[in-house]
Amino acid sequence: MPTDKDNSPRLDLIDASKVVARGCWRVEVLASAGTINRLKSTIHSYSGKTGIVWDLTRIRELDYISAQFLWESWGEKRPANLALTEEQGRFFARLEQAGQLKLPDTTKPFLWPWQRFRNIVHKVSEHFSGMVALAGQLMIDIVNFAKAPRRGPWTEISANIYHAGAQALGITAVVGFLIGVVLSYLSAQQLHMFGGDVFLVNLLGISVLRELGPLLAAILVAGRSGSSMTAQLGVMRVTEELSAMQVMGLPQGFRLIMPKVIALSIVMPLLVIWTDVIALLGGMLAGSYEIGLSMSYFLASLPDAVPIANFWIGVGKGYVFGILIALIACYYGLKIKPNTESLGEGTTRSVVTSITVVILADAIFAIVLQGVGF
Image 1: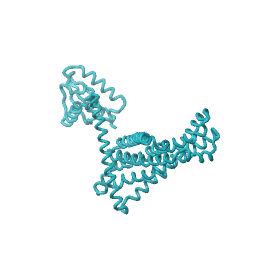
Image 2: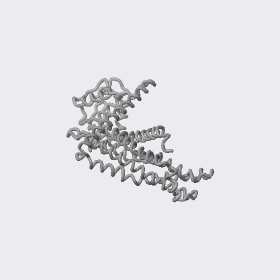
Image 3: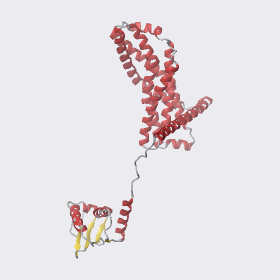
């Protein structure tokens, strides 16, 4: 870095009306201690005078950073009298053009309530039509799969069953057991106050087999496997694997979506049964400890206290929940744009929508089947 007097940037006043810039005006020279403050004070003292001529033609080297420094010191405009070389003129011409650029207005326009309502209806109808189209394509793929099962994606189906089912046994068992313990513990305290200890079997059996078992399994699968499916398709979009499949003529629905839907439709009823068993086991242990209700009495009374229809309703819910979770996960995965921000947003929306739809479907089941199983 030059440090001698000839190379150091400076401004010389000549004949009280002309300022001549000399030396090397480069960023590494300006960065030396005290240089910028010295030049700023000099420019400020000269700027207050009228009729000053600025001559930059004597500068040995001028880079863009130094030109920016002079431009800002002049108040982001050229002095009235300025002598420049051709290259220096291009620097300041670009600075003038950049100064005229303005950022676009980011203020959101005001929307009347009816406009917001119309936008919401448009988005809902768009998602609904997209889901219907996806379900229709799924039915076509299933028909083709049934016609030629040997050409089906058996490997993909098996892999999804393992990832969504076998690997989810641990978390569903832990949550189911804890929910069974909590529900039995709280219910046993209230029933014991009224001498209804034996009704713990009825309360725990119906609530777990009919409602809590399917709902817990569905929420856990939506948060665990549904998000994984959405993220998998989203990454394939980011890495352009989906585009490559389309170019190669490989059916995305047949190879990616259908195996996930079939796998969850098989896995969810089994996970519901698994969650029911573990939750009832936790409830039996808590009831035995809290009110002394023996496990043998619990097992003997359960078939008479809880009609078998409740069990099949729970299994049926699991089948429907599995299909809904897989469809929603795949729908949002295919809608992800090729950037990481869209990947995170799509995964979040997939999980939230899946859980919301599962709860809504459970409410519909409760209304439609309110007279069954009691």
